[in-house]
Image (cartoon, rainbow, N blue to C red):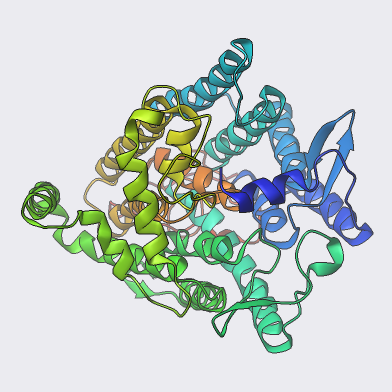
Length: 470
């Protein structure tokens, strides 16, 4: 695994790191996760990810409970207590997510049983499984339809505003406002003259990527009822500030990919032709070119200090040494490569070295299942352009993640963004809302005061039926 991930994770294992302010904030978020309506229940999870460094944790009998993990456990408790799992419908992606972690757990146990070296201990992987399944299935229960996705997205928009303000403070003072909580450096670091702000996140690149891959959801709600709404635009502006101030090329590239993915909605009926055409062009270029197609990474230089050549070399060495990792992963890592590389800034490479083609295949299984979910969500939009855009945004976010994996190994808070993006591909247009904010399906008024902001998707039909609300 990459040294950044290893160093960050291992430095705080088995130790108590908590600040009174962080504990108070966690307590408030626990209260809110039970008090808020279901469509807003994921807001406290976003807040913990955005305002509490990953180092904050309690250690109980050698078991680490990060604040991230604690809020996930309370989210699951809420679901059980309120019975919010009762209308849950299983899909292929749910199987893929469970399969991915089960494969990792079994692989780790098998390696230790045979006397090999497991990259991560089974106990640590059990904690990872709790995070993964807890986050994924919490989001699956909280965000079930397009109305729920709007509620979740507005939470991201509201959170992005103070995060952007704190990033500006960090950039102007060169002091991280979250350093007092332990885990993040106090002084903002620079690379070749570019300052890289990180806020409460685990790395500047992950700070920018976290918001870059969430941009499609904000963009999906810009136009509603035929009119432009400005709150999503404010969220996009805030996210853009965070991305730029992170001082890294990968988040900017991810944001660009998200933008072009959104624009591709205009040519959505020709996507099959575009996909096959792109595949043929890539294969043809590879056959005719003197250098591998992945050498394009070496030419990517968006900001000063970009390490595009390193990323190219990483992929190139990984492919050249495929015999070492293809079946069971590589216990030697990159030590046998012509150019030893210990910073694995490619998620596919990290998975391949950890568990071979089996791990990479499990990741591809999740991505394919997610795209299938997006296709079903688009069909349930029933021809409504604005609802189709919402469903399309879920696919664009998966695309942004898929491409970001080529340049970033995920750890820390961005894992939440990944599983949120996976979970919301399961949304359906199954809970239409009429123009006055009443639920046509339940015949009740929305009790929460935020319903005017986050509960008004455009109907695919003209006039809702009259309902007696008494």
